[in-house]
Image 1: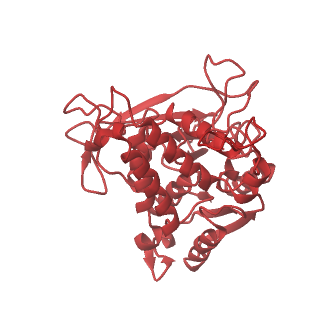
Image 2: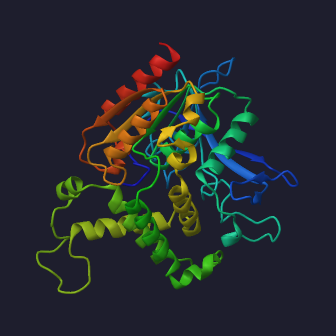
Image 3: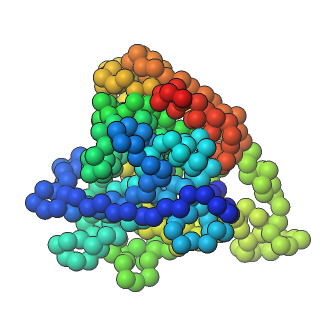
Length: 387
């Protein structure tokens, strides 16, 4: 499934992109690698109304290929345009109720949907950074989000919520800024990548870098590594699904034919689907951003970062409540990894709730409308913020 989960949206939230620029030289942002980056622009969207006390904020962190457009329609868009990627969760009366909470979602540092990344102009040369863009981490992404909240005058957050890569950001928030966060909801995520997850990311990166049009990252203004990026997306997309979902959706059904081609044309429906997903992705995503973001997710390691043994030493400093959610068919970040997170939180004496949702849709299940997840999130936020 595409991260955006596009569907018709006859009415609802109307939003607009906003931009925040900081770290102007000589006050650049110092990254975890030691590199300095500035100026930095973060694109973000807000939903609902900020209370006078600025105490009703929910921060949502997007997954790998998502963006700031978490819900609703942009101002001026027709009613049948595709809404945000988590429109089923965020909005009036939904799991994250925008009649009650002020929701913020920003595009991550290193992304390609408005925030500073490898496709952004390098102020020194005036040309896109390409591979001169410094390596960023999940911690750097969260640091940029913190700068945005400082700019908005927000020093307390009801909850940080995220799925997949967004879940890593939510966990990073809990240890990096423990006094700011009242609750954390990491969904379909992990404390650190397994060898399997790192392997899939590396294959995706190699698919891009093997494309002759990648040109060592310097392809802007000319034909880019479209084939490599499409293959990378196809690889990733397989990890987002499950065996059950693929059997149900495709089986071994042929695509518009009654017999095999006995060649390398599309024979099976699943082949057509993956090629379609790859083609769509090329139209909206930057290949270099994929390289940087996947590497950042591979570097993320909350166990090594905070562990004594395998307990969350730093989490003992926060009073945040946690709701950890996993899915039975998620083989990218399986439930055993969520349980390891829960056990580590318990050893750190944190207040943690856990739910494994039965679903056959794979890793992407959290993006599919599901009233069970809505009810979980709604009830948990009620307990944190009070009804």
